[in-house]
Image 1 (tube, rainbow, N blue to C red):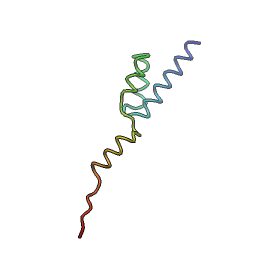
Image 2 (tube, one colour):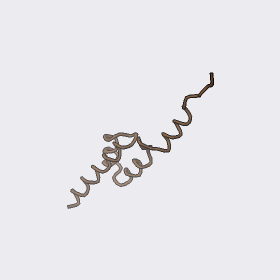
Image 3 (cartoon, rainbow, N blue to C red):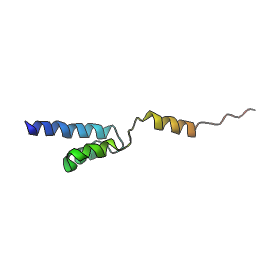
Length: 68
């Protein structure tokens, strides 16, 4: 039974990694190598769909309107 829980945990790490900058394979490896600490490493990485970071980048690089 513990083996199946561990497999679901590894799958969860891969899924969370695929939604973040580190990627699915690296998330899988963090889950395997670091066991339960791996998920904290994954959660500390930046999300790909982070709306706050996207809003800051859009504000920083918005086009400048000039009147002619």
